[in-house]
Image 1: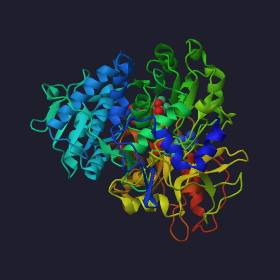
Image 2: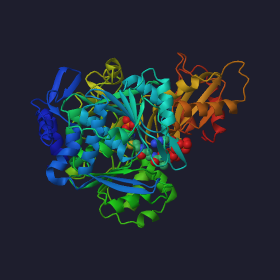
Image 3: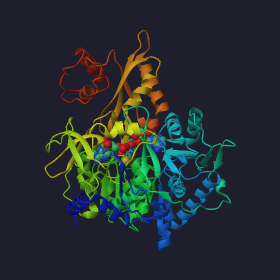
Image 4: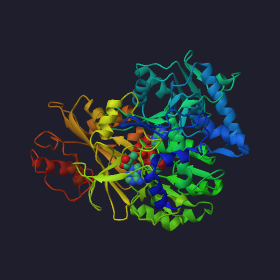
Length: 630
Ligand code: COA
Ligand code: AMP
């Protein structure tokens, strides 16, 4: 059956469709019903079934005789190391780690924060939690101590598992001092921390609180897989929203297993023994779904890559990894390809490698600009498949499903809605608009298995953020349109979220940091177009009357503050001091107009503007940064 038939089959009987897909999962107690709408519009899937994620991702493959197959390949150009871990080894390592966690009191339902770079131990930590039914929350290494502290206070972990350090090409990231500072700042204190000491930096342990990864496993009984209910949270992953407080997206166990397993064949056309590589980070949703869980659930070999698309050592690294490990499906962000294209515009380095095992290149995380897609089509010689998804959904809402037979590729579009998602483009009143008309993209409820049922400890916020605006729909926060053939085009966010190098960031959170500077009276942050990173944050600062400060100094302090409070990942390097901010008469800052001016795009004077002259001042300030050339 091709895509159209499968989509129609799902639409005719969504529950039957997902019950069929559930057949590929090993259950402790099989599901008898798929959808649970008892608390609609909060939906759950497979609530009454029981299952264990780690069993499905690891043990069942060993039991099936595939213990000698590689589960993980660690390829780390930043440490010049490469090694593989078989499924049998992974099982032993994860059972031992889980046993040690259990011996120190971690049980089903306890939260565990994981703060680690791209090492296999990060996946092992996730799987060990899954084995016990503990709920992990992975925090990306590019976040600063304050962001880690916010997450500690929100999910209240019993334990934190961290590495001693991460390796960025230009520096060592000292995880341990960041961890210590975060615990110091947080009100909640974990019972203990497990530190994975890396050769590159051995951290000092705090007696009575910290234990070393290897020593605390010594002599413990390995743990068996603990069955959990279908709606048990597998993990919490924090993502940016409109305000500074990140949203804790909850991932339900059973739906996660069923949906991810389905996508591996239908979308990525991968199964047992295939090598799958997502060049992302375990700190992001792509890392959760497609570095860790989905490839392992499907019995593939997953590549854990600790490096960058360029500079480790050159722009040929991705192609080297694909050749060397015989990667069949490869997944990266458009920004990574833009970085490669900038260094290797003619694709000469691509030609140095044999990519014969590669069947397709998948892109997500931000809009895939046609130039980049066409460059990859020309040089990599396989279908380049854009697909659209969010932390909230955990897998693609729209894609071109390779495993169901590739549809015609339309550059600039992530193609069509996947089964499970009834995607509609709505006007402000919640009515569907005609093809080609821009609107808010919404998904008819219920969302499919594996998508977020709620936010951690924040059901009201869940309803307010996603469900209240368009009753009966999930609001994606993205705007775009559908063409006559049902292909989606994702054009912009409808909220204050920006996308920098495929990383989702909140301008609201950045504004909170700037506003805390003692000389800043008022501020705004916008995302301006960036050739490499898609968008780049830019701050506007109005100083307190009588502040009498050198503007350049205040800007430098704000840049430093942002790095300390949000982290290097914010990539906040530019700000300008202005007298006033442009506002509507009701006091709303005209961010969208400022973005258009900065990007040298045509813009109209907003009818509601308080004082039109301010926009000239803004344009003048932007020109000093080489922006607003129009
Ligand atoms: N731990 C600590 N710091 C990190 C980090 C991590 N895991 N990841 C990034 N950073 C730091 C970087 O070192 C950099 O710090 P600097 O300001 O001291 O230079 C800062 O965060 C910004 O990093 P980044 O946005 O990655 O920019 P870059 O200039 O280092 O690299 C690219 C540019 C395009 C090569 C890089 O952004 C990239 O590979 N992007 C792809 C992202 C991706 O795959 N996203 C997946 C989402 S699905
Ligand atoms: P994240 O939750 O970090 O995965 O970010 C999700 C957001 O990234 C989406 O809401 C979009 O704004 C953007 N995004 C992800 N994939 C795509 C894509 N293929 N095309 C356009 N935007 C995308």
